[in-house]
Image (cartoon, rainbow, N blue to C red):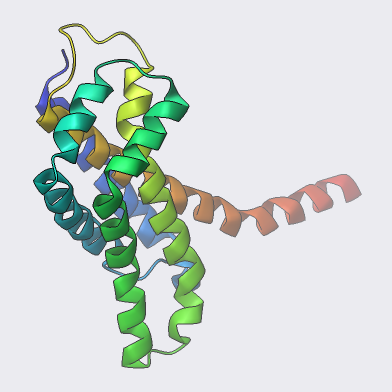
Length: 186
């Protein structure tokens, strides 16, 4: 079975990709600084609540069964209610702080990129483990709790990196269209 360290390294690589893409975006399209960190803290606080209710143990046992992807996602969203809510609420908190501080452009400027990033982190967190379970076979049986949490963390960080990659592509789209029009004109 792949080591827990490998999945933590994959998550760390996602964080580094996120930081690099964040710097590459123009300021008007950047999610509010601290979004990813606060979302991670919110997810961990929610995991504590979910674990105290016994939901994590049930989810770990279900993840090893190889359920269909849709059913696995329903279990993730149903059993990790506090984790999902914690991620979303804590993820938008920096945006609300920006509005309170009266920053130029206010929260409107940062709301779409921030909400897109938080939504992608939510999707990545919930897809991390189920997608792995439907990928190449897992030798050694069902995953453990630490392994499942590492997959959720890696999915969350790569979800954020994917959101920023889409935003970077959106920034370049007008340039590509302009070049294509110039090329057609000859």
